[in-house]
Image (tube, rainbow, N blue to C red; front, side, top):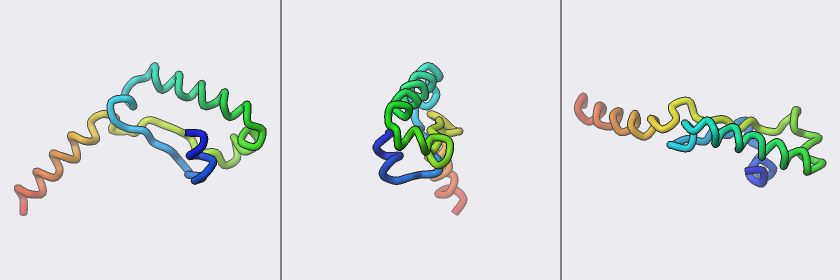
Length: 78
């Protein structure tokens, strides 16, 4: 993730699916990302300036289901 942040300089990174609803994973991921950022001097310098936040997607594991239902809705209401 740190390499992707460094290469693409995104404003925000969202992760979705089943893993995004796992709070323990999210806490461990955030902690590990902080540790890696602190170890790299150039990234540590940019951490509070331009480095993207990494957050779970709002719909979490329901995004696929909502998208599928929406596609069915569109087909039925044509």
